[in-house]
Image (cartoon, rainbow, N blue to C red; front, side):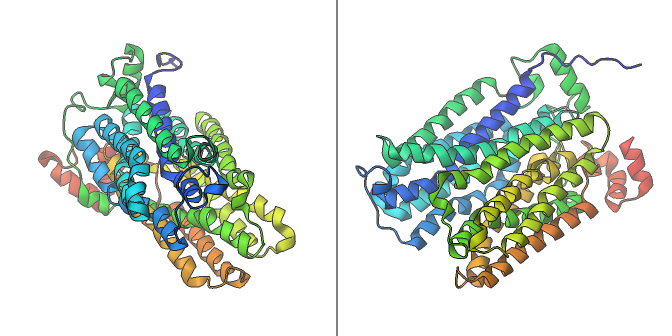
Length: 476
């Protein structure tokens, strides 16, 4: 016999939290990525609105502006993980998002009196602010998502990445051509960030018991499914730094995410240059071709989500098996298409676009495959694990252009590009192999609330050493 669990309303506060996270990611990516359109508008006013100032910036200046965001972004990933455990997710995300909106609003002013150097500076500050957010997002999902719905709510909220990409591509160009010109891109981005802050302030809560709007049935469903102790939300759980940094599943996840970051940055940033140099095709000048991979990524993310729900609800795959299967699709299909793109010539431009779209589209499975894995490994310390993993993964997009610049001396030389694609394909392949061998979707022993408590120190040491009997006793 089965008993139907009362989960509260069909759309409850846990769904509202997921929606708020989706909107946050969308808004933050809009502010992060609109710089690509802004720089073009600022340096070529005739292409947008000629009534606004135009700047004579070199390609190296543009490159510094485009990369400056990540200089700040990688610094505060780890800090964000600590702060949200210390002060709560709601507070840290509110001020991080508000600060991001302020830097966006001030960008035109800074550019006016400081040029490209000031633009780099304000983008670094925006990176500082946004670097706090993703560790908080994973901690928030861990506190609000019942294990049976964690995949669904996590994947839905992370589709904000694709939505933000598409919005930045389409709306920024429209705004730049409008009466408010390129400064309007920054102002609109700031405005939507401030609107989100207001919604977050009203509807967000650090956890279900703190919410003013949640019903008793949904509260009981969430808290009972998470199996917290009675004083869980009041106690400060010590962070097992040594155990986290020496955890094989965490190290495997870190390597996997770094490999994915290298491969994706190659797909998104370098293939357009290859198509322009080797295939004589400037897809950056075509809005449809530029947005097509991101549209495919957005659509495929929902295909992965629905498939995951079907497989998990029917007990056809365990969560670990699901994560490894989806991650294999997200890594190995782009691995093959990258090699294929390197052998195309000018008469196969359509096939090149198709392969690029397939690569980026299938790569969206990495969200369910490995990105959400931080919550599986440690619901209590998801923000810390995410901070560590995301710091390493976001260093990679800074390194990728340097590697490509070292290899590719002539953008029209296909053999040089084949080396670039071979490296990315190799990392995609090896990264997933490591995840298959050492990855896990099971909460680790060091995630236990009492792992570092004096009374359980002996047992904790046995767990860290991996003794089977201690692990069995702890899991019970």
